[in-house]
Image 1 (cartoon, helix red, strand yellow):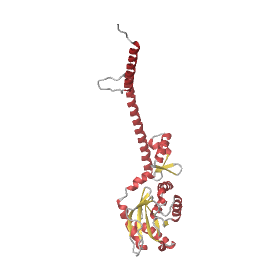
Image 2: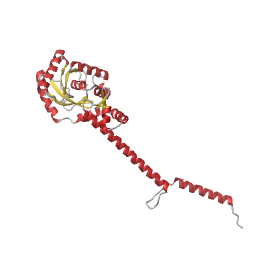
Image 3: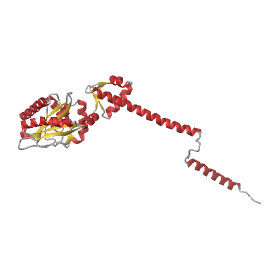
Image 4: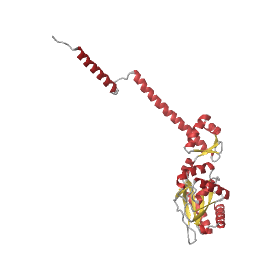
Length: 304
């Protein structure tokens, strides 16, 4: 007679059922092209693909709208556009334009101009200034030669590259002691040198603030320059009509600078003359500034 131990068999069956359930739970669903997915799973997969496509379409539409606003801002030039103008140009609602403008302003591609208008921001100016017209250096070289011949000291020309200045031309003078503070190709924060300060002061207030903020961490390396000091020098340059700076980029050196404007009146470059402080009293600074103004008027009457 065989005695069946039901308790042992039931226990074994239970263990086997639990193991089977655990296996089915932990094993990933494997499908092949010959196996039909359950309707519920298939519809879920289709929904996921639809969501992805919809998200991609939304992102493309947002990017396209942002580019439309940028295009409109660039075409507006120095005057900029109001929000109502941007709505009309891009065919967008006011709320959408404000939302896109917030992103563009935060990223530096657009800047507020006054209270109601928007213009191209410092990021766009940075990219634009990296492409230096090949004839700028050549057209400024005769100006430098004339100024240097008049004063005997070295003269320099710079252009803006975002928050930096880039020396594009230099003329050595005839005085026995030449102060060659920078050479062609030198880049430094815009405003720490005389030419850079003159160009910075000629920019709109929004650009000035953006440049000073971008250069703030590096200013202390230039004669203990600070953002506040830079703002004071910008105001003084605007009142005077030309820049003067000493003991900042180079100790014991003083330089005078003047902005150079393009044919549209916008500042595009600047020139400067540098010498020792002893050689640059107030009267001589004024004479050099006058020489710069006369050379620009005679050789570049329509701007650069």
